[in-house]
Length: 466
Image 1 (cartoon, one colour):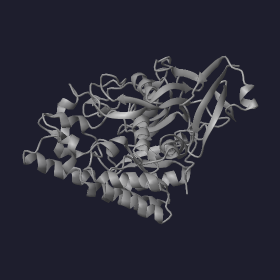
Image 2 (cartoon, rainbow, N blue to C red; image 1 turned 90 degrees about the horizontal axis):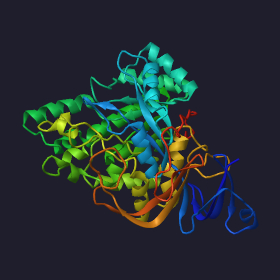
Image 3 (cartoon, one colour; image 1 turned 45 degrees about the vertical axis):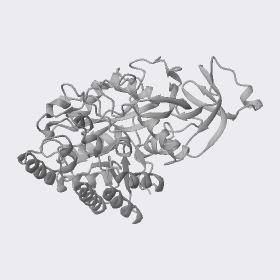
């Protein structure tokens, strides 16, 4: 039996803050006891970690990443090996990535392909959602089988006609099936058909710079699609999770649905909380670094997003980590913003940025852990194995220094991408040590993990329904 004891830290979960020592046995949390008490003092272990003056928090659960995703004629630049290592550096110990069904192929084929990409490569634990690109009778049957196997969430797109797009009839059929089998539909809510018209018109006017990516993907078309997805889910009697919510109007649609008692949930991402159209408008094609979908919005939208996180109209902050290098990848869109690969790097930055939000007074410490660890684990059937520090939970634990200052930069990050979306941003707080199932992955700012330590983790159905 291997034992580790973490002494002297402030243990923070979604529900509690307590000065406690933590005992880990064979990869699980065995016990907590108030620091300095006879119970805690009696513990012996091969490894002792001094967390005095630090936070002891659950490892982050990033429920939205895209490692090695094929998009726009290229691939996301982080592999499962580099991406999960970077996640660990940022205090995230579980990712849920997206397996992709190709049109004309089965869900199983897509899932098998993504399992092969990740197997033996990951530094931390991982699971999969399934992107459903081709709804038909066979696909619907496969959804039932995948839920039984622990792939309990399915992503559909109202955007990207000709690639991932599903029409309202296909969406309704998938939602009806998820209402029966317990799966959760995740929706990319943008009116892709209308956006394509606006893209064509903008390019015809000679509006080719990256900033026009944000101008054609209008907030009203995000809100319209969000409203439509909610109504389709209501007709199907199914829960709905709206990914990467970026706009005031979309938050209002989700809040209205929740006020009506519907099982509708919303996720936002750090880029919408900390970046804006000002970045998209950076000169000399630099704005291409910030092209993602849904797009960055004017800064005034951030107020509604922070309010939504405080009121629980938005429940989760994930990254939508989908990095493309500026050189050779983002540059594919020089002269035509519609050809810029959509996506930002961020899996390493999320926990630190959200701690900065605590420092800035946007959210509380417990809410930080709730939106970054506990709720994503509950939403996607991983709680309490993941997302908390409690007896029986996996020992995914981060020792976090709340006083250390750092400057985010491509020079110091570990993501496999040639720029930082937060270059030069000064934040307070930094990961010091990370345990994954009790094993040190980061030890006092040194990587001590390995590819293949992370294991595939099947999930139960959503534990967050109203």
